[in-house]
Amino acid sequence: MSKTIRATALVILAFSACIMCDSACAEAEHRPVVWKMQKARFDYQGFTTRYSCDGLRDKIRQVLRDLGARKDFTVTASNCGNGGPVPFPSVDIALATLKRADGPASIDAIWKEVDLSGVGKLQGGDCELAEQIVQKILPLFEVRKAHMNAVCDPHQLPTGAFSLTLEVLSTISPS
Image (cartoon, rainbow, N blue to C red):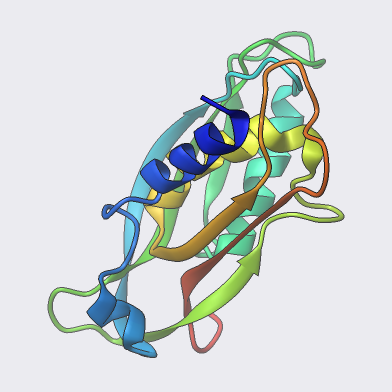
């Protein structure tokens, strides 16, 4: 299977029905939502780039901010060594994210375009991390129209431009 086909299949699988809106949702501009508390553990397993626990924690914090997690989220590093890069760093995450309301909701949300790549964000060397964020972090949010432009191969930096863009439900007014 070619690298491009494999990458495309991965993105399609990662953004299956569990994190994509149905067509009725996609057409609605405003959505009633509620804040939902969630906990997650993120274990990074990559071959190309290694992170210190602080480095992984900072990358995940930036992604959560960009995706619109409520400001009181926490990201705590674990499985750390001596402060330098470690083979399998982990972070424990506690956060509140917007989820579509099944019943009454007091918060109104709209779809917001988000670019998780660029200066100060995810870059080509973070390709394997970006794949794992797609699999493990994005399902915590209401996401649609996600697109990752990169082919991640172990022990190789991606060639060409790298990007990870999507739309996420976001509050109309800051919270």
